[in-house]
Amino acid sequence: DILGADVTLDDLPLREDLRGRSPYGAPQLDVPVRLNTNENPYPPPPELVADVTKAVHAAAVDLHRYPDRNAVGLRTDLAEYLAASTGVPLSCANVWAANGSNEVLQQIMQAFGGPGRVAVGFEPSYSMHPIIASGTRTEWLAAPRRPDFSLDVREAASVLRERAPDLAFLTSPNNPTGQSIDPDDLAVLVDAAPGMVVVDEAYAEFSGCPSAISLLGSHGHKLVVCRTMSKAFAFAGGRLGYLAAAPAVVDALQLVRLPYHLSALTQAAARASLRHADATLGSVALLRAERERVVPALAAAGYDVVPSDANFVLFGRFAEASRAWRAFLDRGVLIRDVGIPEHLRVTIGTPEENDEFLQVAADVVSQEI
Ligand code: PMP
Image 1: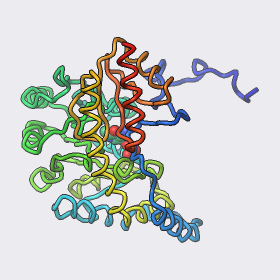
Image 2 (image 1 turned 120 degrees about the vertical axis):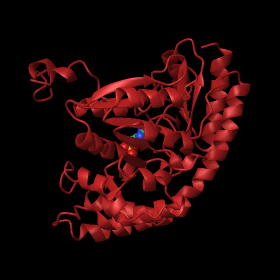
Image 3 (image 1 turned 30 degrees about the horizontal axis):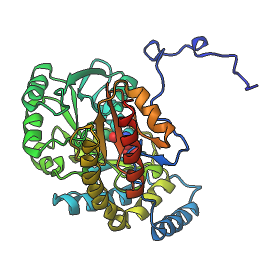
Image 4 (image 1 turned 120 degrees about the horizontal axis):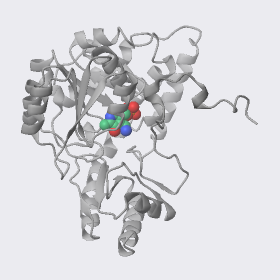
């Protein structure tokens, strides 16, 4: 007997456009092999855990005070990391951070989208983009990728020119399909777009392609590059996303961000975690090597595998993706049904997890599920 359980959604004056929707989220199930949310499978090393604990302890002493609203220390550290990894001279003024890149994306849509404005994405892509558009009342325009899920750059550029969206979302590497957009193609797309272009680089560290950050110097008036510590940095539970852009973009986002959105604990933990970047990012090479092992093994087992530049792989074909997803789960392996007919997505895990997955994948294909 839960208090208030007699009240249903239909009894509430909910926004009409939210009626009938279901919340976003992959199932969180306790199974032996979890390869469904593109996390880094390696837990943080003990030195990192100790350093985070120490930093959080120090921050706890000041918990009666609001945190640094502008997270200057953390943004400076993130700018240093990006500058070192891309060679582009970024500073604190070029970086903004929030609770996961989803919050960064939401702030971008609050500032540059909204009622009467249009955002475009090339689908299938990250399904939170249209959901955040809807939450901010930004009209969403879904443009297609090719049947093989690659991006037709010429076609995409003409969509950007002709539809002239206020915002364009380019995901590189693209989730859930895995392909990257190379910087020359990206420049063509950014040039074609009359509005703001958001390059979602959540999986950049796994990619062999240079970052869109290299275009910021020439295209700072319309380019935003989103990153996250959830994937390569093994900090999904810490919730820290960030972006690189011209300082004016950061000024714009400060108009919509909630004051003190990043807690003192989050800022302290993220900075401590960043001090161990070499150790966490060390796993990236391993995961890339595992991807290069898993892809041909899946193909040899008889699957169609979409080329991937990220830490996940889209594969098929299944008569019914939802039934195949269940078959993997029944065999102890949780992967992702991303809603693409005949396909499922698997995150690259540890070598042991990948072995387990490949074994189950062979079993599933042999049973023609
Ligand atoms: N962008 C893309 C392309 C993603 O795949 C994800 C995570 N699934 C995110 C953004 C958001 O991640 P987070 O909020 O954890 O930073």
